[in-house]
Image 1 (cartoon, protein in one colour):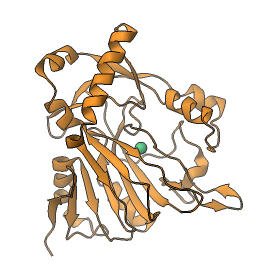
Image 2 (cartoon, rainbow, N blue to C red; image 1 turned 60 degrees about the vertical axis):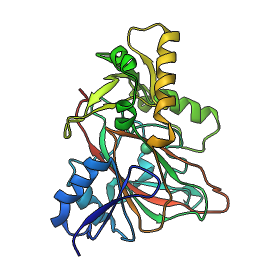
Image 3 (cartoon, rainbow, N blue to C red; image 1 turned 180 degrees about the vertical axis):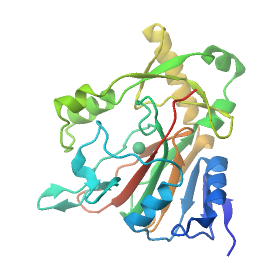
Image 4 (tube, rainbow, N blue to C red; image 1 turned 30 degrees about the vertical axis):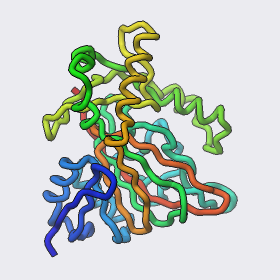
Length: 284
Ligand SMILES: [Fe+2]
């Protein structure tokens, strides 16, 4: 069956069919769909960790351990895969139970943020736990020209520390980071409008979770601009809501979209996923 891509219902994402993720031969077409849509969905394909790692590696070098994460959440024997799960083994969580429950782009607080994230669904709850994606390329394209001009050449600060402190203060059951890990959570400046290195198109690169302020700007003006950008980015026309099914693999472009994992009833249901991440370049 030839590979085909159609717009996913209710949003900008692409649903790709006719491919076998275990065979690398279709990668150029998959990559094309990835660049065209920013988020692509492949349904009904259980993936072994080895296949997921091999497929993810086609996008670029994979991420391993990060200072912002505990090693305990990495898949034993496959540290390229992070477990996102509320399951427990011997009374201890096997993965991150509350990952990404806020709008963010993965590892945007690093010098070279994440290029792509690949998440494979092994178990999902019958309700809740959707992932929302906002297309920041579309958001940029639909900004008023006056605001685009104000953003020209501007940079903003990104840090994981803000979110980490917030979730710990709210009583997250995550294993606390060591003092060394916390110290490694630096602040990084990135252009507010970045140019996608593969498509050449411009996209916003700010998110409420990690972006704290606009460089060289008074706090109130900086907050006003960021609030306006966040509100505009969350316009329903820029959103795709992914309702997970077992066997889904969703691949997103962190250079172009931000995402938010919605909560579900963790006392009643299990959600278990495998995530792999691909290194990117310094934004420009
Ligand atoms: Fe994330």
